Image (cartoon, rainbow, N blue to C red; front, top):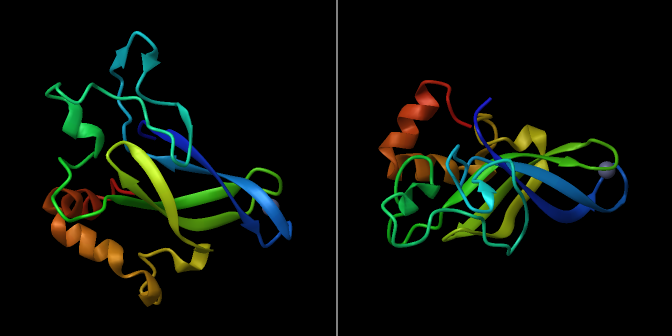
Length: 146
Ligand SMILES: [Zn+2]
């Protein structure tokens, strides 16, 4: 498994029938590199909390996205599995980012809605993202992402 960070957010868990904390693993801002406060990986963040990374003026800054610098007019997001910390239920989630901040959960659905499911037409957007990022398309092709 590659390096990751954890994003925690609260959503209604359909299994618990109550608001619960879900954990989501992100590959963003994850690196073996470190600064005086520690490694840029295996950190826990909340929605709205800026992830630790290289300073903006460093050459490594734009690498917070694993496949290359953000492009103008495209909101970076990541899709993956979110897990209820009470009952273990897994849900499909998509989180939008702005710079180094996980901003909001823009999809939260049954795991069967995973975008690679050919029936999951509601979540076609990741293919748009892949089209915008040839490097990501190559990673998906090689089975390296997500
Ligand atoms: Zn639950």
